[in-house]
Image (cartoon, rainbow, N blue to C red; front, side, top):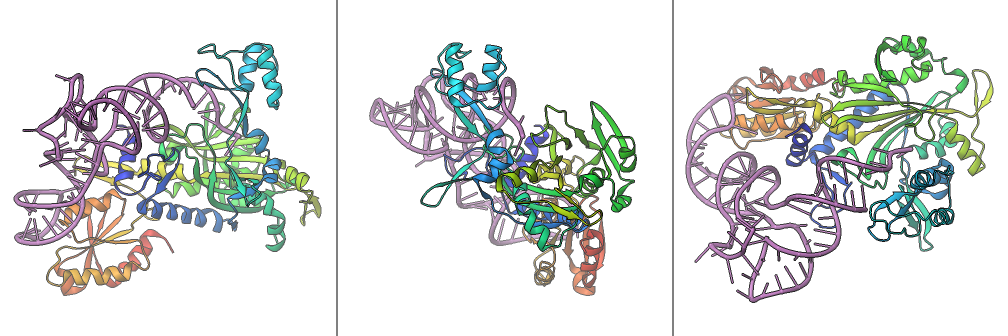
Length: 488
RNA sequence: GCGACGGUCGUCCAGUUUGGUCUAGGACAUCAGAUUGCCAAUCUGGUAACCCGGGUUCAAAUCCCGGCCGUCGCACCA
């Protein structure tokens, strides 16, 4: 069994994630639920993201609508660029990208945006047939990757957002004013996005409904190297993968050598590196890959993907795009609003440019699980070596036995700890079995109440990875956890 | 979306070829009790599944059709 299947199995068995609507036969692919364990872990991942990125960098966070009006996506370009013209064979049902297929067969240069009529005309003119069965094609249609929704009784057209960042863009003028913003200003959002993938696959890796954590940095394009806080991260080691070769280089040198375009980009790639190194991702198995012109999104001028190596190949976790003024310019044009702001440092009016860190949370969760998975052959155990801030359960509270008052003592300790920490109480089965269960969901610590506890009010704390134990006073447990976990 | 293969307790597997003692069996996990008391011990008992919908048949887990899901390949991946 490969690692992907192993992690999948563990996820199903231990409540990390599982298919949505699974008791019904008409459940669709590409929709997954986080179970209790996975939800805890996801929440903690997001909390760490807030701590290491938002709070560290004084970013501000918003929470926007998932349904947005049609105009937003006219402006964003998604209605045009997100729609593929398709032709379907009348006979065998095979479907093709119309523009690509026509270009290939007719040898004609096909303009990007052909109307359905024009496509049908060309199909007829060249007498194009299905390559597999020689059948004729039905009238062309358009497949849009956005989910359309109808608003109110008049069924006004609107869409589920295909990326969370659009609300950051359209909210920008109000946010900038009310929060007394100054460039560069980073605005973040975490939430669901929706894409009607043709073939969703591999559980959390390619979903139709998924979590993004996006950061949009509004900046003055003339001052991308004027960033005093860059000093704090200039020594961060970045692993860049550019045109098929690796460059492991500190942030400062990466800018000096021209691998990265400016300090602002280098700064945020550094923050991202520092964040992921605290999630338990094995950083040696990550890289920033520069995208070629063909791969870049339609809005990006410079693009790096933060990728992580897993058993299913290199996975894109974060898209780091320099979107220039593409978004604000289009939104300004379509909405007829003035989105310029004044940069007090040179008193000039500027339409901010954008640099974004668009993070896939679900893929990150999967990658962390896979990088944390460990089979201890010698001790015959499966361990998720999750770092404490990410672990769904931080500590298990286990009475060694349930008699002689140990159960009551354990429950007393549990009832106090559970208010401040993700705590799990378990008295069923042998102590060894309970340790194993906790290890499988990545709990870093187990606290055991034994007979000595009744005499001197100490408990043992067992370390998941080493299986070593240490005696701690009950009154010191909170301090112990705070210190080791660095939550506070 | 196309093609190939597949879908049985939480998990893994037996049963499907050749329809009928299958009222669906086992292992692990889980729950309850007993016992032990620091690393998946033992014993007893329990819960728990034929993906969904049609059809053929006296009889369907088994055969047929459709759907859904999964894996792989192609295409797609803003």
